[in-house]
Length: 571
Image 1 (cartoon, one colour):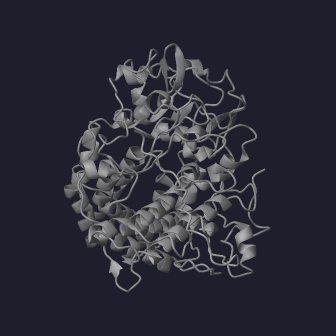
Image 2: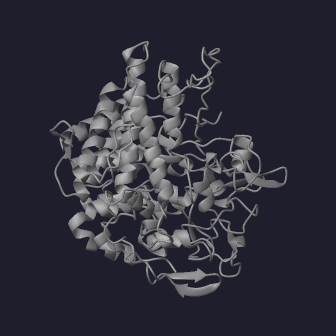
Image 3: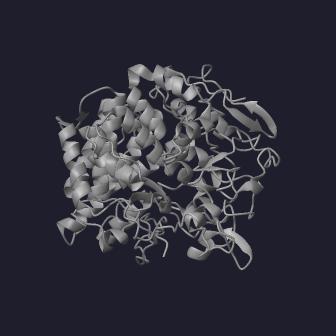
């Protein structure tokens, strides 16, 4: 069964009649003062914290997900969408379409942080069955709080550091203080998590954090903080720091003891590989010709470590974000049930420069990008340059195929594969169920090579796709390997920032603005890409919602380059 992450609606039994009608104690529901009493209560509270990973509390869903935002800000994707879809192109061009453009992300993360704070404040209340039971809950809460703050720090830079549930009006915390909290939470999580190996225990906890995932995340945090802020170590709250040798030790423990591993076929990691003749009456030519068969998401795939899980409960009466709306963003416009590539909103078209830079000998090139007029793809009915696909903008003819709607044909009907696999209703807006994998074992290996400046781990990644091993390590080779292995997985933009460093963002400007001049089609009109304007004075960070600045009455200060009257709006 598909692992379902949903908010737990907590109800309690009727407590009995009050002795006074003036008694204001709630009788039919639990509150913060009487809820956190049992391990079951804590598990439910933890589930509520996990829900914030997929929820969209307000505004555009697009603006709530750092995975999508960072993809559109990278040099590998254009905004796309229809001619009236300003938001994706504003993100791509480093502009805004409103003064509270990212309010949904801000609200979402502080909601998740509040839930983690509440859980950790009450962690000693239950009568735990064992230290391992308590450590599993505490470790996950600390991991989530660290992840929420890490996402916020990469999106917005310096933000208020809120570690208590009492009302507070705080200014931005210095980056060193924020990252010290992130590092301390992850270090504590690693220490309190009970040891597990890949198998039954992890299978039933898919979508949940564990010791190995915390080790992978602290390596990612270390690389970003030390790179972007140009320092040697990662600070800790109580003093001292997390050092490179310590991070390497954690990564090696993860590599050698976790049970996670590379899967043999890179292309079978992605659902397009299921559109073969076994599952589809009209198979996807690329998948069929290459003998591909999806590893799926139920435990056999040992490479996926931490992922966003989606449920079959999405509908217009509950919350559409229970389904994978990110895949919907990246589908083809006006292409409903015409083939294996499913329909969506046409966002995130692929920059042809990436295709040109990617060696043909690397199977990940065609395993990650669909060139619609390539006979090997079998997608000629896309009609590039003839069908305008409902006013598609930034059309390049190149589309990523890791995260997108995938159809199969059964009983002469095209539908998303999730209709067969997860028994969802055929609805192109709600039936995407694919996991969004936030941490993959291949990334662990690449981080290990980058930190140790050795070739053993990077060569494992290269060997999997039939490439010759590197004889000697170089950062340039590592950068290329990360670009090609992790393309379209949400890390490219942050890699560019950390490799350049805060004082050298002019380098990032050159890379990102190289998008300008690439040939595109806008609503049927051939033209070139223009408008991308990366401004180093922003630090590479987003605008803080102006309403938050105003509500703070001057305590919270807007990020440089995004002040009212200065920030460029998308027209």
